[in-house]
Amino acid sequence: MLQKSTIATIGEILVEFVSHKRNCGLREIGDYSGPYPSGAPAIFLDQAARMGAATQMIGGVGADGFGHTVLDRLKANNVGTRGVTVNSNLSTGVAFVSYYDDGNRDFIFHIENTASDKFTVPTDLLDPSDTFLHVSAASLGNAAMRGVIMDMVRTITDAGGNISCDPNARPELMRDGDVKGALGEVMKRSTCLMPSISDLAFLFPDLSEDAAVQRLLNAKAEVIVIKRGAGGATVVGDGVRHDFEGHVVAEVDPTGAGDCFGGTFIGLLAQGVSLREAGEQANAAGALAVTRRGPMEGNSTPDDIAAFLKKQSEHVE
Image (tube, rainbow, N blue to C red; front, side, top):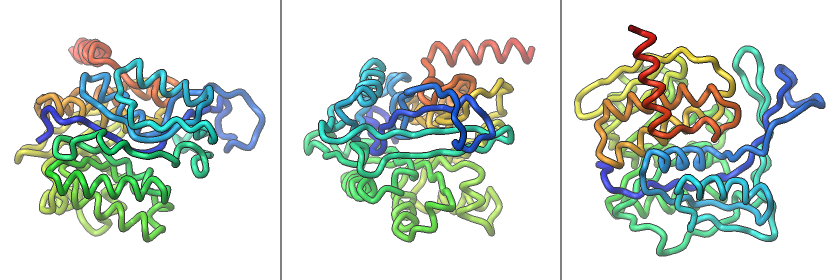
């Protein structure tokens, strides 16, 4: 399905600032850490590249310090950046996040009318028939990005390439008919879908989890990955179900953990790794991700993941 394909993503490339003060709702003066490289598509692709996959990032940054911060990180981890437009007239997108003790988060994004949604795709960047495009549905909420993403989704699937999708079905996004319609089309064209348990409940409120998975498999999808957060994950494909228990870790910053999970999973599949092995390593990478402050800081190398799994197995014994 995926082997030897170039993995690509399209969407927001940001820096993020994390509030040290909890339960403040980004309304109080306080200390922040940052700028951290961020943006769901960028986090996903950085992790896929760390796993050894061939990658291409499509998006935009400003010709400023923030833009260089993210580009330097992506290049250092061997992410292909020829598809990143550097705009000297616009600033790089920025996000601010604060946390609550109950696990909820508040975000403020500055994406529209920044370099993040002003980019062009080089016509010779990708071979559509040999491309695996990952779509983070949150990027569909931006009209400019949505147009580029949908054009690429159609071009790639019509040429025999593959799509994966993280539905990220936020209620506030799904109230927009254009976003909902675009997500529906992406899901119908996807070979691999990676919903969270809350995504499944939102998208299929009248179906059990098993029935929702079967509904997706009856469409085009060949692999379904259910992300359960601290509860682990489930991978369904090739007629087999693989369940992975969650790892007990000290959570510091959960932002980006799902993207790290997805980048690990798709990055390994692209290199011929089995569904079971890819799921086990992605589950570990997602757990590791929440133990570090900063969304892309949570990404890991294969050696990091192997050491974590070894330590976990010794703890169980």
